[in-house]
Image 1: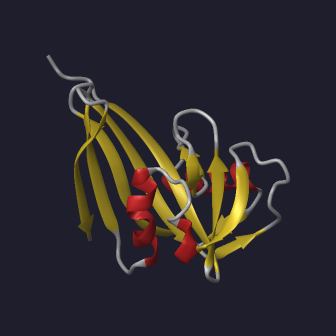
Image 2 (image 1 turned 60 degrees about the horizontal axis):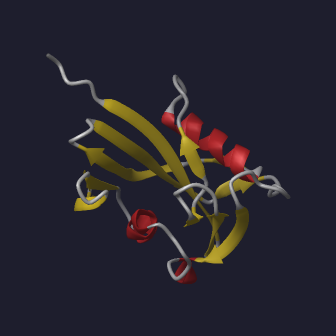
Length: 157
């Protein structure tokens, strides 16, 4: 019998303007803290199209010239789940920020100060990688017994 594997795919886009990046202060559900805009890729859209759509929905901005920076993922061998995040960076955008963004308040934050804000550990772990040359891969194996992250592998590719 074949094991069914559940795949879910999200995107995040680090939008840089000089020495600042756009982060949203998400304060609902279990995924709270400062993070780049992004969200779930809808089938059958491409990863890049999903990233552009999510930025528009969450910020009001139209981004372009996305640079693929890497993949970060959570795998749960017990539940046969793989949650993958496609990570992009850009400095090219136009438009005005939404007055009442749906996912949380939007803030232009200094790159050097951003990691001092409340931030999910997986976002904090990959934050600096957005600004380094090359790409990255981060795999976190979920520890079902502890209900938290287990082994973490970071590769610069």
